[in-house]
Length: 551
Ligand code: NAD
Image (cartoon, rainbow, N blue to C red; front, top):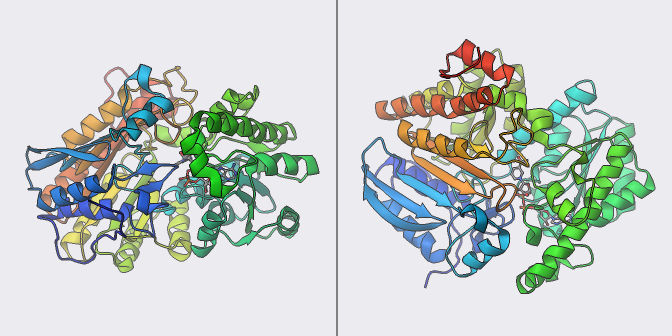
């Protein structure tokens, strides 16, 4: 019987699998479940509510065994976290193909999914949990940093200095918010219901201070705001109670968002329930719990709308809280926008998105070397330089050392080729894996998030992520995944991911060039097709072929 146990990826230069391509998949699979990385490793849960890396411990053992033995011309098939086949393919084919949580439209609901999950037939893959390229909270840190810096530019003269942000949720992703705000020189108050989660953010230096009392929290953030001193304060409480209370007290808040796991009503704690009773209650009475969670979310979002009415910058940060709150009776839930149409879409038009890489050696010096290489490669990009420098100083690695930054079409393959060269000539001590979030420019259909309010109304068209997965498979990615329900929940998104390994060989260089050109090209063509002028310009300037482009 396979049981829970601590998992840690192999380090160093000795292979445990048959080649570096499969070794990379094995190390990243294990890395997702490293206790430093995963939120609930014993349950195989990596992040984002119940996002898992493998369906159960028997599947974990079987995936480990198959990746260890897989040949350089074989492909492992994974269905919702369970290995279901090994097939003879060829060297250019992905070593692993993954499909997680996919359900046919009429069946794509949480109750149906949970029934199948309880029967042992499926798992929830989130975005990078079931596709083995989660790198801890840093993964979202830069996206969050970029989002807050876009808000600073839009509303506050380029800096958050002297502003106060209110948010909730200090989980795997949400935990990035305090550091992203203080990196933009602002003050932030973060409401988290589970003290253990909040403490973890203090331990990893994402959160400066943690207090129990709301009075104390308000005093600290108001003083820091007056002194224009960056500070993050966590307060233990339920956002459905604390947000309305802050509104009632008239605390002067400039920016409001939220990153509780609202996409899954069982992962959002309703008012009046103890953290200790949470999972038991949710498991025993899911329907009643869902109703109570939605009703609490309606209160929570109602207060967000109240702050909007008072002139604050308010946005949904990609967790579907508006749609859940609407189901809970908050009529004005969609009065404020999602973060993609509000701040990120212009970046998507340039094929920009979260490019990330990890050092399979486990040696932080390898990431330091790649950081230097990035600064040399893109000397004119000041915001990239600022980010890489700050990340080097302030980001604690979780699991295998890793880095993230947003790069666009025409940039990503240059970085990938440079990393491959560094592996080949020994500037780093072992291969580098290069991947990205499923939240990217051309890889998602998610009408409440990445594709909200598309110019041509194509929000729900999911052909694009499927084409994205197919082109990455055809271009030589090492593993490719197609998921449903990530970020915003079952029934609300379809998305694809890829990971490509720089092992220093000429073959890897050829694959990297194609994958890291074609993958962001999907973002450009998606936005050309939807009618965005900036995407037209990028396609024309950088030579992306779009057969029926307007210009
Ligand atoms: P998580 O499950 O690790 O953390 C959620 C946190 O919210 C937990 O710590 C939980 O205790 C807390 N929480 C739940 N109910 C609460 C309440 N009523 N009041 C206060 N705190 C409460 O999830 P995560 O990985 O941090 O992701 C959070 C959300 O963000 C998810 O919905 C996820 O899908 C979404 N997400 C957004 C992006 C993005 O780029 N914007 C990226 C990834 C994930």
